[in-house]
Image 1 (cartoon, rainbow, N blue to C red):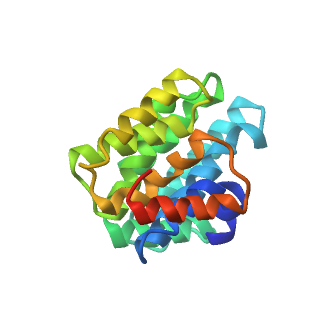
Image 2: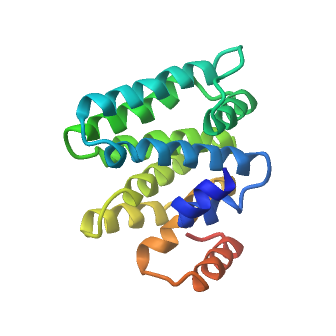
Image 3: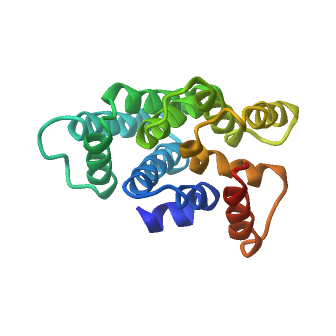
Length: 201
């Protein structure tokens, strides 16, 4: 999972590194899963084939959350371990798939998709307080948006909760640092480290 997420989602990859194991591995599994779902529109332009691809993932998640051995696919196997270790619910995984299905023939509902991933990440981190959930939802949705006042508002709302959020949620909030301004590959890790050290995002 490390190489998949490092190459596809560098900013959220860096954030996940600040989580302890085994939570770090769980976050990376979820990010790899989300990346595969997000690729649906790029790997096929035919809506029916896209739906078939997402149905494959629904069946795979049923296996990952079930008692038996899941299908032999690296992301599915990794997710199965994450699901069982952290008690993730199949329905929560399917919500993320459903959000991406809406994107096949229309725009992505960034609120639904961002919230779905954030809820899974919070479950992996063992965080369930309202302030952390609100902040994670805001950053999760903002991450999927283009630049603009709505994204800025969401980031601002999340930062207003800094003193209330559970510190364990910081790894999934740190990518907010990259939403402020573009950073080069050498500066970005240092910016994340400094933000984590100060407990800020």
